[in-house]
Amino acid sequence: MRIDVLSIFPSYFDGLTLSLLGRARNSGILELNVRDLRDWTHDRHRTVDDTPYGGGAGMVMKPEPWGEALDEVAASTMSSGTARPTIIFPSPAGEVFTQATARDLSTRDHLVFGCGRYEGIDERVFEYAASLGEVRLISLGDYVLNGGEVATMAMIEAIGRLIPGVVGNPESLVEESHEDGLLEYPSYTKPSTWRDRSVPDVLLSGNHAAIAAWRREQQLERTRRRRPDLLPDEDAL
Ligand code: JFB
Image (cartoon, rainbow, N blue to C red; front, side, top):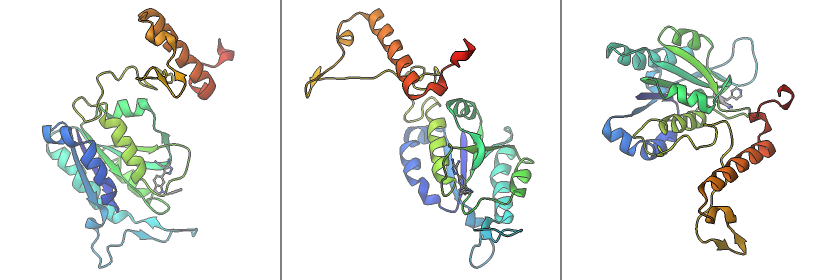
């Protein structure tokens, strides 16, 4: 998979380029390119924002640098003969990112993340990007961030760990929270007693059927208490 990130704060991604991509990058499983959007400006001040038409608070990102940047990064996959890129714009007005979104995106050959700042990006950029690839506006969740960078890092980490050979890819992905629609069961390790707190007896019993049943019960109980929205509607039963 190839991932291109467009941002006016490319150094935000330094940690990600080091951690996630160590093994995957060198083996060619994943190629991550972080590019500074200001490299596609042509004025002395490398301007990426301007005042909003119709008035209102704050600034809006100008379309021209985005158009040139998207042309360049999208053209490089299209010329290499592979499918059109999937172009993701993190947005508080997008569809909410879930594990299902991460699974879907982990199957793509080429992802482009366009990180907005200020009050967002001129709407015509999204329309134009749709001529280059599949455009997805995606929100990390129902809270307000200052830009798309943190959301992009979270999404790349969630997507990357689903790709075999990427650092952080566990042996078993199926037992994790959200993969089976329930929260995870609690985990314990040695010592069996710590500060007067003991590990549940069943886990020391060696009875694998009893352990499996206890873990399933814990998953259901935790999900009911903490995340009832994940369970089927009781009224529907
Ligand atoms: C994403 C962003 C802004 C308009 C603009 C670009 N879950 C999320 N919350 N906020 C964002 C997000 C995601 N994904 C997000 C991109 C941009 C926020 N801003 C700032 C805040 C509110 N309204 C600019």
